[in-house]
Length: 201
Image (cartoon, helix red, strand yellow):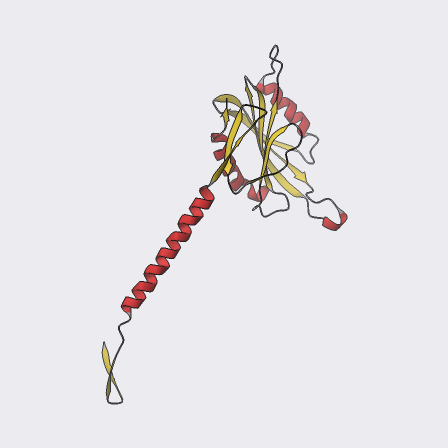
């Protein structure tokens, strides 16, 4: 396109080759960032217990924390936007081979123990399968005070929990997700993926 300014002909510079180059570089950078994000988000770690024939794969963004006694694995999501972080715990208990309890009996015992939690409320239970073994899934809620110290006071947090109870030849397994109510939906999706990757030899 051209025009006349004060008697002189002015030709508009044709910058589209440069604009096209900038656009291509921007698109390439965005695609690279997207691929990098998918690589980071999709990265996983595998836990294999020395104490039990148990293996589970979990997102690499979750980190292991020191497990309490009697616990095979404890991992948490540091990105949880709460003082109470989304946590997955795996416990294993040996059973009496002469008289092993039923899954329902173990679930009833866990529900009874849940009564020690503040504002414990059982939300539901249903049959479930983990690593090919039949079990039960419990859903419940409770309230926790994450930082209970004068200098570190924080509001109480409503926690949603999901627990799978499975009985196998190697014993009983309890796989539990605890997450703040606001973060539960996302954490539960990740937990479902972890459950699919559980292997009990």
